[in-house]
Length: 491
Image 1: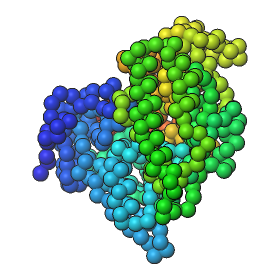
Image 2: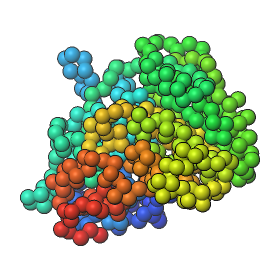
Image 3: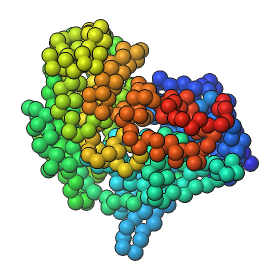
């Protein structure tokens, strides 16, 4: 039986809203299937319509939005752990399982853990891989998938069926597909032995000093404080698992929880959102934030405690740009110049002004001078090259993901700056915006960034010839210039 339920409190009334509050949509049909047969029946029912899948709705882009059918996979949350004769641990995970629940079950049933972790664990596994969620110093989570099991369409019969991809081009497409390869029912990946992480926060005099630490601290991420323009490296490396972690771990977790996750963010909210003061924002980052940072103290704890952050206590909007490693120095200099220009505190350096002038973007930047004061640390994370066709880190070299966050609604002023950064850095450095965060580029710009996009489209057409899995967002950014137009008209 197909179940078209509206018994979830979050969905009981009004449109569905994402975590950031910037995406709202009202699907005609909301489904919470419990079996694969129900999923197939839903797809057959909407074979001439539009079907999108949602998880934790933590994306800031409208990647999950649907005007027709919306499938909530919360009941597809099983975790099956299997250990080979050689001790290799494999996890088969339902598409709707949240990462935090996956970690709990995996740790109860084995001495293994996930091969990569993003900053949060609220995401459903299907959503995390569909947008190539990543941490720092490793590949995106998508890269580690050995199998994707999905419900999509048979191009010969037009009927819904189950696909199981374990290699080849289809798997590389499904590893990061923005929902365009069907409904992800489950995934399978090789786990790694549990490990501890040693971490220390170190102020650095320059970006060169930050990058020099990558050899010894391959999991590090680092921050650029706006208005002080100082770098802080969160040096991280793997160490053997310990039975105890010493005296420093518990107070360190308390400091991070109350000093950073709550205290820092309350300070940001106070000066930027409630007081709306540019002067106080400058003072806060120049004189207060450096004293909130616990520096030069090494702490060892479980990887799942050290690698995640609870930055979701306060509603915010985020965009993130992936820059090839060879451009990171130039990109960091460019980011500072643009942030200072929007803040109105410094002239645009001559070399950057010349580059923007050649692109026809200098006048646009100067027109926005003094219109927005950025108020959140700029985060840099190194991501290894992925082999998924359209993962943001796909290619032959590592990437740096540069994250920009705002806590100050309305979001429009931040979006203006984020749009300028995305468009200009795409042309200067080949920067790619994260699919699941605020995304300002169009299809023509995206085509120039992803050489494998034609092959990805071909894979999508093979399992979705009528474009059922395309909403307005993915149609606009991935398929607007596609020569093969679906034959069915979508709702």
